[in-house]
Image 1 (cartoon, helix red, strand yellow):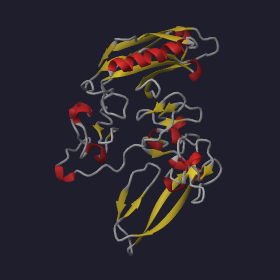
Image 2 (cartoon, one colour):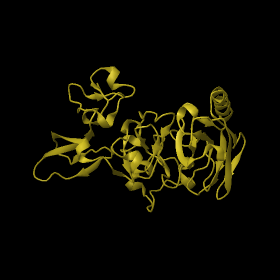
Image 3 (cartoon, helix red, strand yellow):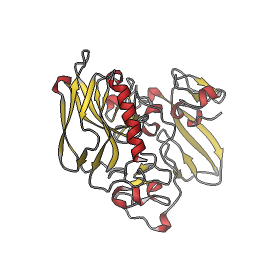
Image 4 (cartoon, one colour):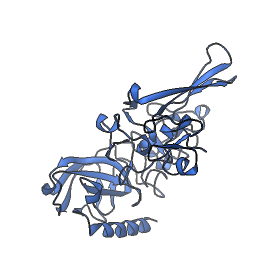
Length: 330
């Protein structure tokens, strides 16, 4: 499987090389970066139209690379190198790569290389939905659905310790007993769209209006695209930066004898007790789809920010955070 992955990326890299403005010659195939050591990313500059470039560390399959971290930002392409010290929070993995460039059309790609950090190398290509790597210290648990996270839903029943940080399924700061284990309820979305050429990851979750991943208010602000952001959320440090003028709230009343569930843009369910009777209200906050709010008649917000009710709107590219009741469903 690893040989196939390397072969696929080699072909992908060769096809891009002809048109690329940058040729990344280090790291190359077979290179290993180790925890707490410094390395230079180097490239040949063939660009004639870019004043600055970013150097990005990505991982995953060649056709769906995920941004892990920007190593150097807005540096001169003629510098031809970027120094980086491997920190503890990078999980060990065999499918890391470097992207150099300012805009996707000019990107130069390195070959795949390996990073060995504080945790072990992944077995069987790591946590399944995380690009072949083990979970990091900040998102330590590999859930039953194959995503890394730090919640009880990720670290409870079904968590895979082989692909979790340091081989443990534990909520940070808490050891779980078997009586506390429950089924997953707040796992990441599986219908996230690409932000430019890559998918936004947990470290850089927000996709800006210019299709770049980042974690600051410049990326997570009013022009952020939730359908292309990690977990469908435009948030800095877990707190939404979307203003009240850009959000509309719909309240749906349901009759239930059980506690009510409140759903927000973060798609995390929390349980509260009804205050007066068996009737409780479920409140959902959704974003505008273009200039309108999708309705029951036209529930799905497509990738072009238009509401509709056919498979064209509700299937590939649909944005649940902007759709009626937060669902892409006919």
